[in-house]
Image 1 (cartoon, rainbow, N blue to C red):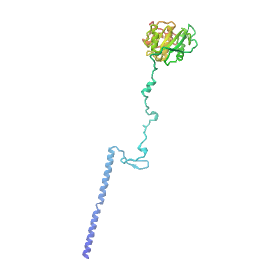
Image 2: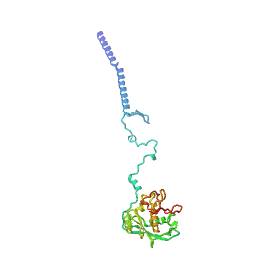
Image 3: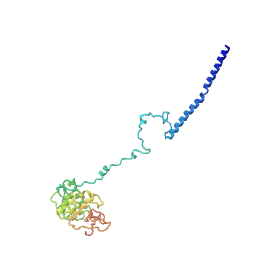
Image 4: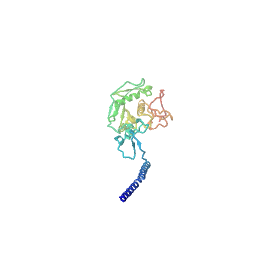
Length: 299
């Protein structure tokens, strides 16, 4: 009993010592595991920083979200709405530039048919005589068919041209009246091919570009009526004044063409300005603002 008790007591002490020996490493192992975990987190943070991943952020509800976590966000976060640059209101946002086709349509010139049927429609309109002295000359306006130019509108515009304060009628060189029949002369607006044919009948070659005077009256090239002249510094509407004043000038007896009176001076209306200005300034009226006749040397 004494030996057995002593043996059991010895075994009990051995087990106690072995149990104690097994429990002692627990502290160092926990510390070692904690160090490994900290090193892993540090390495992850360093790797995240090296890759440019932003640090964890705190969202509105106070939760801390790591950028390394897989995101299971709301639809708003998954597909954010496009943001605008700071300080740029909608009216300052870049606007699409107009397409070449839309720009071209704005600056598109009127289409001029090269030829027509050779038949004309007369303006069925008349007016009061313009001017207070000189011979009364009645005129009719005709436009070639198929040109999309209204004979009535053309007649109204020519009537205004002949009544201009710087025109022939306003300065005593005759009176003019728009009529629809029994005219003294006719003003015809014709396509280039038809104008060439009418002008060539009196020996004038207009090359599809020029106007002329015939035994019947005045032939206006549709191209010049619609487009003006590349040498004239003004609108096509102003150039129409030059056409009518030049050709009507022949009608009232001014047969001679004129040249430029000097550089920088207005070109005479009886100058063929489409052939070049020779230093003169383009001009569409026979008289200046003070009523002085604009003349030049014979051409």
